[in-house]
Length: 360
Image (tube, rainbow, N blue to C red; front, side, top):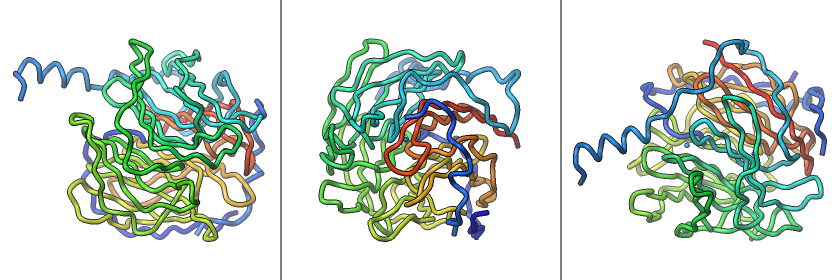
């Protein structure tokens, strides 16, 4: 049993509409690989209505027949990968980039229909990437940063920013970010994208926050994190951007949770995670922030924890049947999908897909 840090300083939040979602063996990895101790985000009225309607999420997948609080195995992905990024656009989860079992970066993009669990190949990225960030915004897929060197999974950090329109199947290059980075956290809140932490080509762990306004197509710099972290997770929830966990060279994993309210001058430190994690992912589902998977220097995690946005307290959720790091994670309503990722610490891959329906 891992030592768990259940410190639960009250987080005063008002439950509001959460924006945004914020990662080889084809067999499920054994859960026992992660059992050592390590715990501690001017128009007319008619035009405005049209825009609002286009931004309204469609109903999620049907829930009938999906068990509560139990992970289900779904059809395997088309590829076996790790260090991917995933984002939900409507009823589709896009899984982008990462590296294959040959340890080379890929430009592949897979699309999972969340209603039918069917896979298809989507338009590849303009270049191979790993450790990039993907987000969905108003019916389009956006991909930022990552490492570009195909033969080295931690070199060639980029500031390039791309948009895929699923209706035209074309990628468009957008203004570069202020800082080249990979292994960062990214989340959409309102009409802005927030990107924090990560690492550059000089092996510097970053504290910086970059903010992109989708309407003006301009970047600006926000207040820095309290300390540099890479391989973090980020979500948008309750009117704020949250950055969780991560690691730094020579310092191991962190339990840090920081929250940024747009317009504030600094990040707020919140209740730490029960488990020090890096190379994991997080989403918002069923009134909580859900942290899934991860790794440390010697093993991969199956643990899943939830932070209640009402109480500000962490609680244990059902473990992944197969421990993974560098996975993709998306959510729709009470459902969470864990997609691909490495079943063992280091450069490993899988095509495993599992789904969890959260209860109360």
